[in-house]
Structure formats: structure tokens, C-alpha cells
Length: 236
Image 1 (cartoon, helix red, strand yellow):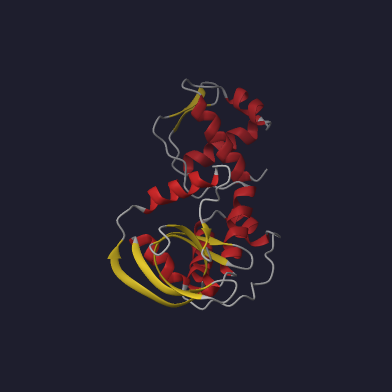
Image 2 (image 1 turned 90 degrees about the vertical axis):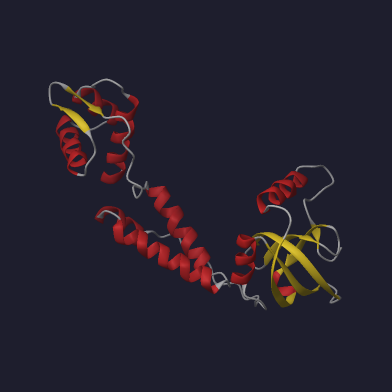
């Protein structure tokens, strides 16, 4: 267990006790020496944690203390690094740059030992997908955030083309393809659109009449209905 993780555990233990608890009890619960416990208490107090008490009297954490937002366990660090590295290798270039920048910002404010763990993680991501994107996925993500309609030309697996006007509400990233989930005005139903088959993408300033959260909830509910898949492939 890293020192930062141990300090986080100590905060959590103190949070469970409403009355002062002895240093010996805390040390036994954490599996550390009493000397290490006193040193950790002093470190947390020095970092601003409102821990009251002293050796021989016991310690208590004042109510209302919020944990520092950048205290991570080893597995949380691995998840952050792996996720950021995966996003950075996706065809959505703007999202990839954002992932790299976010990881750099997190690293800049981490304690030294956690920053070392972040730099040393050995979880790797495979090569970037070779499937080219014909559209800017950033435009799709913006339309989802704004709840605006999108127009485009779509070619199905057989090469047949059709014009679509849709209400996009989700974007799924798979290893080799990206899929936009949307309500299709042409088909009057939910549809899946592979983004590598989209061309002539046109943004609009028209808000669609439903909230994206409500459509996402309805689409997910369809995934749980026997015989339904939440949204059909756009070729249908």
C-alpha cells in the first residue's frame, strides 16, 4: 500500500468514528506501528485535515471535512492512465488531445509518490484503429451536448445511400468502429449509424424536441426487452 493510499484509509477510518478514538486502536485497525500512525496523523494535520486530539487522549475528525479530490488508489491511477491512453489513440483527435491534457493536469497536482505511480504504470493500449473517419466526431459530440439535429448521407453495408435527419444522443467507441445512436426522423425509430459510413455531415441550429437523457433511458430500456436491441442498424 502506498503512503498516500494509507493516509486516505486513515481519513476514512476517522470518518467512521464520531467520538475520539485512541492512536493504538487506529494503528491496530490499519496494521501499522503506533509511531507510523502518529506520523500519518501529523502529516494529515499539516495538509489541513481538521483532526483534533493528541497522543494519550485520542483523535477525532471534525464533521464536514471533504477528502482531497486528487487522492487515488493504485487501481484508480491505473484506470485513469489506461482510459486516457485509450482515448488518446481514438480517431477523434480533439478528444485525444483533451485526454492527454487532462492526464497532464492531474499529474501536475498529484503528490510525488502518486505521480511516480502514474508515470510508471505498465498498462498499455494497442495500436490505433486503421478505420478512417470521414467526419469530425467533435461535431457529433457537440450536437449531442447541444441537443441539435444532424443531417447527413448514410451508406449501409451494401453501399445503398440514403439521406437522414437525426437526433443524436450517444456515441459509442469500439476498437475498430464508432457508432452514433440517434432517433431517425426518416425511420421514426432509434437507429445505429457507423460513423465511417457517414458523409456530408451537416450541423443545424434546430433543437430536437426531447431531452437526450430521456432518449438514452428509453433506448437502454429497449436493450432489456426480449427480442429488442434498443436501436436497429441504420440499414433497416
